[in-house]
Length: 241
Length: 253
Image (cartoon, rainbow over all chains, first blue to last red; front, side, top):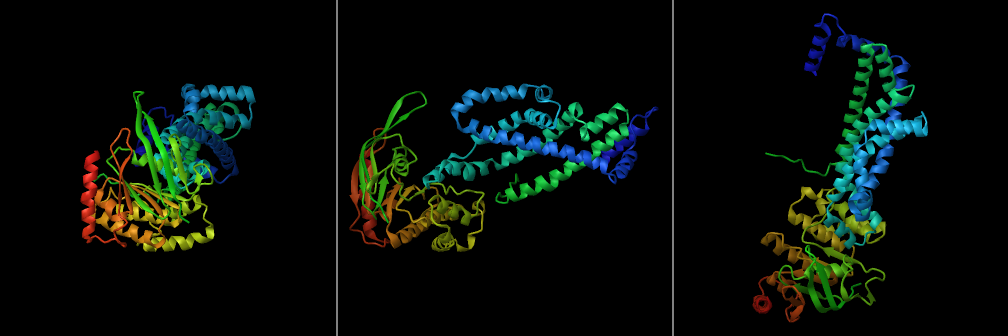
């Protein structure tokens, strides 16, 4: 952190024609703006899109990934499509969504979800393949129905991978959402960053960036970290020495 | 409360990786009376586990008939508990959570759960470990927890697939004593699979000896009804019987 600030200060003050505003300037902007409602409204819009986009992509990726892992039929029919989806640049999904659905909120969410769903599906597919068959046999031995086996024996084993997918997915999606906003929405952090970029106000661009990263870090540590601690209480800490 | 088992003309064919058809079991007939403790003794790979899988409903691709109680497989499923070589506890649930998992699967009413957990955890000596997670327990304790889980559903049939072969000898000795003491109370029907001759003599009413595969079948039967219960480790008759059993095994291997 300290090194980052040092480099930033150096980059701000050393060149003859300074382009980069120094950190304290950006901090000043931030301190001023958090007291006004505008930045929070943009944050709200962006977070909402992230949440919806993430929920949509997980809602598709989880059952899809499980089906690919457990069903030979599904794997043979749809397996290659997932890889193809992964190869398509996210920009294509965003443009397709906006042109076919319209330049609206729904398209924004769908676009962000579509860009990310492939990698989440593959993640979950891999861990579905690694599920412990012996535990499933034990559950069947006791007479548990297939649906209950999925919910109480398979899903908990996917928890670690779902957690990793959630983190990774969130990381991807918020960049997608910023991109989506930049391309076709009129509010949100991404929109603001592009707005100030076009005005060449690098200071405000950095301000919004720092603000947003700070919020995402907070969510990561507090929300995801908390969930992770609760979910994995049962695991003994692994030590290499 | 306890059911009988009848297997007639059982055969099982496996397809190997290179497309060959391997007839692991051929023409197996066996019966277990309700409340009997019967052991299937045979070398590894002779198909003993396959029989248990068919009985538990885990495997439906076999020839012959398998009957539990008066109904054939496929009717209302009798309450079966299957004890494996590994404890197979759900690691993300506590010991109590694992017992409740089985109680739920066996459709035992929720009102009875607390009472059964207490009763069976005490019976296996894990009363103070109810809230521990499996990975915090030793192998022997985990296996004890899975025994408590199996008995807690008050099964009509107990299937056990070499449950003590992964434990050290001392722990295994204690586990066998524990198993018998739990079994004496209700005398449920047990089909126990092992490759350990002494274990088979110590535990059972009858031993069914299987020859090694392929085309394996029950080739001999040794009755132990004359051995008194409760069984003790210092009974000399036991070691005589073990010699008999080993002789039989050697003949067919």
